[in-house]
Length: 272
Image (cartoon, rainbow, N blue to C red; front, side, top):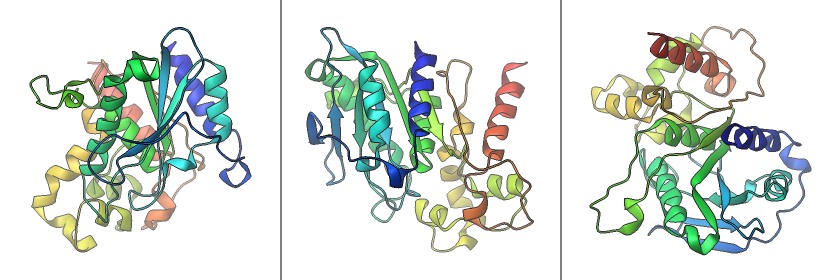
């Protein structure tokens, strides 16, 4: 079932270009506040069912600097609901407001909030998947690979909930946000401006400042990959063509090399 969920999520992402999509239907629950910040809001579309349904959570892209939950593909939404899968779409703090890890922690809390209120939304909390493109893909992967962030003794009951996922379907994902890793992988000395903002750096030269190294490493989904992680289906719209030396960030940030690096790490770590 979980692999089917991944396939449905990814297939829906590829239905048609964003500019050709129809308007999103009204959600069953709009702008539900899941945290204290003004962007800590989510929408929920409920699949009609007499029993609890699986849930797919959409995290939007935008380089962590822009984007909105309303960019959810309407065709995907209807495909999922027709398959008996409810859908949620969440906003999160952008990097101009708060640097990493705010984005990942917000999206983790959105997941925990939905699990805490599973009864309200008729959700099966054991069957929750995540998907998104670009930054949303990275967030989905980060949650999919990361150790459970549940804090059983927390005074906030939402934060006691699990953050583990049952399936992940990232589109144009970055398996690492470590600028050093990306420079080596892509044979470039360029740093995407979105990463400067994400880590709260003042300029690209801060990549050599050791105080940022722990953030680079923790932000990268590939560094959290373990054998017990959920099934994942990754798709890249960019061809696997060779890149020129010192390609700019916009040219390599969605390159399939990120997927090959992820597969290589998986094979290396799990083959013994």
